[in-house]
Length: 402
Image (cartoon, rainbow, N blue to C red; front, side, top):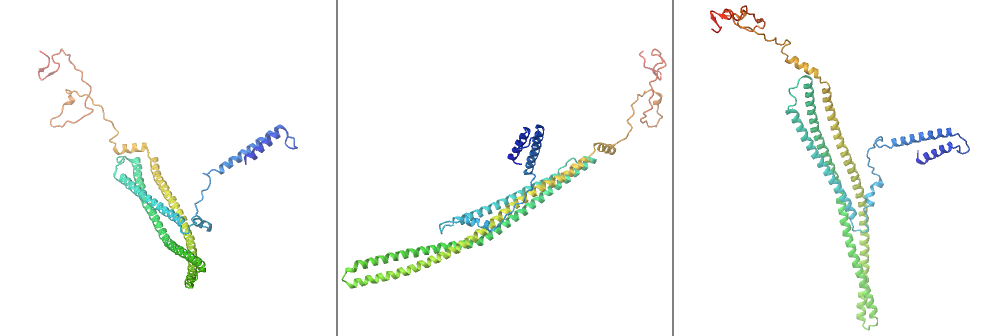
């Protein structure tokens, strides 16, 4: 809905609110209803137009090169010159084609250098995943995730190496296309060089014939003037010489005129031949340029598609790593470690006090003593007091200070 139509609808609604809408008399309430009705649908149509014009929602059509008859005349119509010897238009076309060939060569070198970068990166990444340890002492679920991670990094490295080979193949195709066009152009350029040389040579001959014709005409005019000046002379011999010279000059003028006309006709034929070959060359060169632009554009499109595919492939591989990480369980890894390295479930018993003089310490001769956790009992209570002489007596030896 245009802005003017939308404004007209608003004006119509406002008119309805005041009861002055043509011959119809409407109430103020119905006018407001019309106003909001048209306002709603007007804004809706504007929003729909805005959505339909969004470039992100439109379908991208492929690039197409058309080689119609009018299109093939573009180089020819733009390379004309009033000077018959001028080749500035043709030279401009050749320079443009050389620049296009140079651009293809630069893109070819770009692909080769990018391939070298991808190959180096892939090999470095391959060495990293195979030689550099990364969590090699992990266990159970995290260990499996790390194994998937290293494997996918290895796969990504292989993809980069494969991409390098693909880029080299694309560079080779670009080189073949460039050389093919060079050979095709060479045939046309040889023909055009020949007709340019023939046209220049014939033009030179024609100009020489023209100068000769003009000189003969001047000689004839001088001979005629000499005859008129010698009309009153009485010497018939001199008059005869002048008449012979005049007749000779007239014959020379006729001969030079025929030669001049012959060269003019020949030059016109050469010019028509050159014009025909020039048109053909322009058509060939423009068809080549269209083909080159189309090939260059498709090669660049394919290149970025390959890079995008590499990113998507790498993301798919990394997604496998993420899925394996989702399968990791901290509880399972802890439980696995405990089960693999457990030493028992009974903690050690407390160390009890053992009295050296307890009867339980007596060991039979020859019997090996060993740890006995439960052999130590409570501390014995002495039966005699410290003042008792029998206290702490061993084999009639008293420890009491005497």
